[in-house]
Image (cartoon, rainbow, N blue to C red; front, top):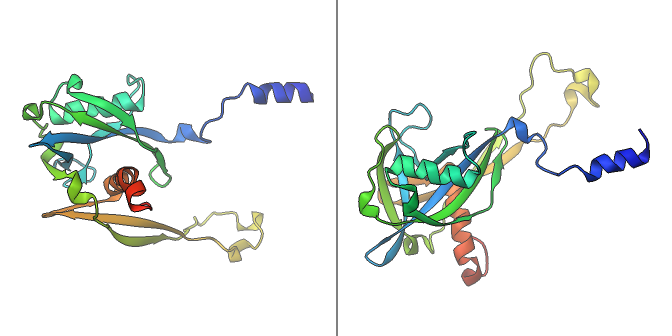
Length: 213
C-alpha cells in the first residue's frame, strides 16, 4: 500500500467514537410541564419490580433499539410508554450534551422536551412506581451536595506484568468521580439523573450567575 492509498482511505473515513460498537446508546428525556403557569420538571420513581435500580429517581428513557432511527426517537418513545401518553403530546425536543459512562459501557443522549395534556399521564406500573414534579425555579439557586468516589485498578491474576515497564511496580492511576445530590421534599435525586439535571440547569442559568453550577 502506497501513501496515496493510505491517505485516500483516511480521507474517506468518517470519524466517530473509538470503540463505539462496545457501548449501548440510551435516549433520555428531561420533561418540562406547566402547572398553574409555572414550569416544572417531571421525575419518575422506578418501579420496585425492576431488577435494575428499583425505587431510584430518574428521567424517562431507555436503550436505543434497532427500530429507533435516533436516540431522540428512543427518548420520545420510552417517555410515551412509561407515562402512558401519545408521542404527539411531546414537543420542542432539543438535545443536551451527550456523555459516555465508561464503566457501564453506555453512551447517554439526553434531550429536553415539553409534555402537553398532563392530565392524560397514566404511568406504566411495570416501570414507574410514581411520578412527581419540581418547580424549575425551586432548583434555580440550589447547589447540590458533592461527594467523591475513588476507583482503583484491580488486575487479574494472569495479567502480563512482564510486558509493561515497571512490572508489578507500575504506577496505576486511580480514578475519581463526583456524585451530585439534589433534595426535594422526601426525594433524593442523584447519579445519572443528577448529572443530567445539573447540566440542564447550567445551560439555563450559567449566564445569569456568571459561572456553571
